[in-house]
Each structure stands twice: as structure tokens, then as C-alpha cells.
Amino acid sequence: MNNYLNKILCGDSLEILRQLPDNYVDAVITDPPYSSGGMTAAERSKDPIAKYEQSSNKMVHRPTFYGDMKDQWSWLHWCNLWVSECHRILKPSGYFLMFTDWRQLPASTDAVQIGELIWRGIVA
Image: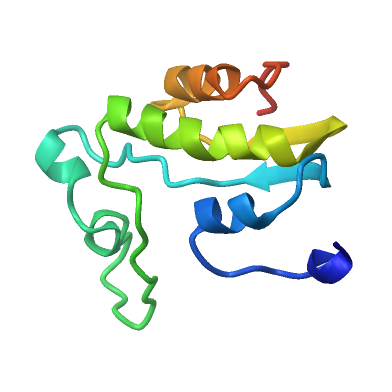
């Protein structure tokens, strides 16, 4: 199954993860959408393009992306789906590293443990 060796795979990560065999990768390093931008539900549900625009420089455009408009419970459920797949594809000695922000840290630790990975701590 070396057809994935040293390749960047673009697409829905959950669909791609499901195509990989068990115990296949040495490490997963992921930076999922945090679903935490904004103090209110209305602010959090904005399109990521509008939510994260930091300047009036309209020459810098970032693409929109799926998964950043969830409440904390639906975000945790969604994380459980793909973290569980990461657990399945990781070799027994593999590493799982997940970026998050301070607002989602409690839910992130839950997602890692619900996905049956061992929580080791935080790297700042």
C-alpha cells in the first residue's frame, strides 16, 4: 500500500482516512477547524472568510472551509469521527498531534480521549 507514501492528499479528510489501512502511519499532525471564532453564536456561525479577515487588505483572500461553524457539542462529535479513524490508522508506536486554541482545549482533550488515544499533554 505504498501508493500514499510521501503524497499530499486533498479532499474530505474523513473520506481519505477511511481509505487508509489499519496501523499504516507513524504520525498524524492535524490542524482542524476550531469552531471558536466569536463570542456569540451569530459571530461563530459566520463564514470563515468573514470571521477571520484581519485587515482591510482585500488582496489577501483565504478560501472558505467546512467545519468551522459548529457548536461545541457538534464539534466534539465531528472530532470523534475523524480522531477515531486516526487511532485506527496509527501504528501502535505512532504520534498524534492536534492543534487547537484555548477556547476549544477542553473539548479537544475530550476528543482525543474519546477517540481512544492516550492524552499526554500540551505543547505551547
